[in-house]
Length: 315
Image 1 (cartoon, helix red, strand yellow):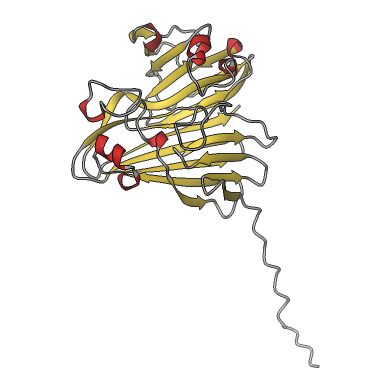
Image 2 (image 1 turned 45 degrees about the horizontal axis):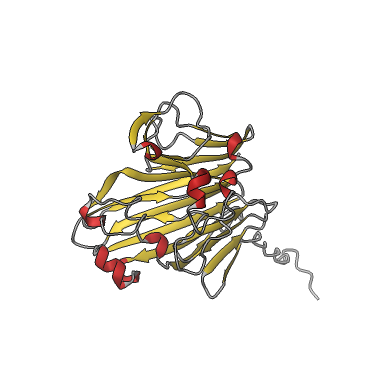
């Protein structure tokens, strides 16, 4: 055999892709779960596109979910991250939404799972997309709110964070007004040792005290009774709201285009009156810090879109 001095060298081995997130659909195609190669996980129920669980690499749960939560589609989930749209609470004086149930219909509707996406050069994150449109609504909801809309909800899991992004589009010819909120239930060890910072000197509506207009002092928020407040932070959405538990910073919430923050804990009496709130002393182990656009109405003309987001970082 002739020895060729310039013979081609062996082909380089094909570089293998890094491990990718594993996404599974289970429970009668009603749940979507994503697990990163590093162990972090998120679980979303298609009913309401409700995030039920978010765990870090060691399996430590970050969200509070009531033991009595209904996960069969009979009512909105108590816990996790329910989605509020197109009205926050009830609005009897706002004609378009006056007949809707509390917090609207997004958390009571079955969403579609639109698929996953990730950075192919990295295994650091995975994005899950969910959709809801006026065509998906049941007849009763369409009668109560007859506007054409589209909702795109993206949940992105990364090793040290969870991002949730909601895009609302007016797909009809008629303008509509709406509100939206990410009703996040954080799991904490002891509400009596929790502080919330980042809302200092900010105006708020105190819903426990007759919806009176008040201003937060320069001190952190602490809890000693039922709390239900709608803040409009003076430092804007980009300034983090931090939840500290027992002197240790646990969560850092950064908002994008969501001007308001609701802080809620039902305490003893309110918890006792909610049939799906279990255990009854569960208020000791949860606090809601909810990013939203709820103090005013977002008006969307034909073809307009509104996008709001939060990213929760583990400190």
